[in-house]
Amino acid sequence: MRWCHNCRHFNTDWPFRCRYCGVGLEGRLCSSGHVNPPNASLVFCGECGKRLDPWGGRFSAIPYLWGLIVLVFTITVAVAWVEVSGFHPVVNALVVFAILVFGFRTAFQLVPLWLRSLIGGVLGAFFSVLKALLGFVFGIGIKGGSRR
Image 1 (cartoon, rainbow, N blue to C red):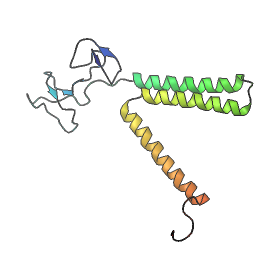
Image 2: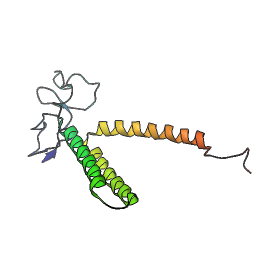
Image 3: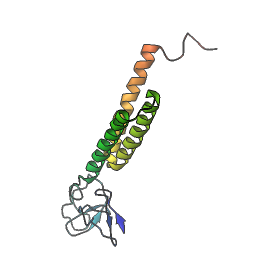
Image 4: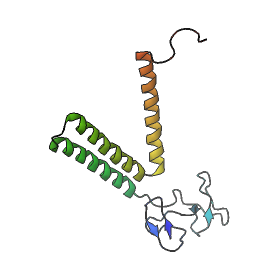
């Protein structure tokens, strides 16, 4: 049994291609079924010389849809909590924060790795700029001339 990282289905037995989305599970495959390394710079099969699949299989929107469904559900639950609950505003803020952290973390784990890396890089750059801006505005850091 093999797990497809593209469409997130289990495949029975040990196939070279996913039975649901057609992506190569071992690497990039040629039309004859020869397995090649997943290197993007390779164009032709190393055994028979035929052209390799450009993307390794068809595109699957299922992970993106699940991530979007989880995000919409998370935001809906957070808004409903604020509207319905009669607790103190600080308690409401903590509960909504916990709901949002859990929901966004779950949605983040559902999307493919390349999108997680992109989002992580963008957020990392944003927080680096924010840290530098706060350091400039509020003067966070070592004050004075030299340290002895």
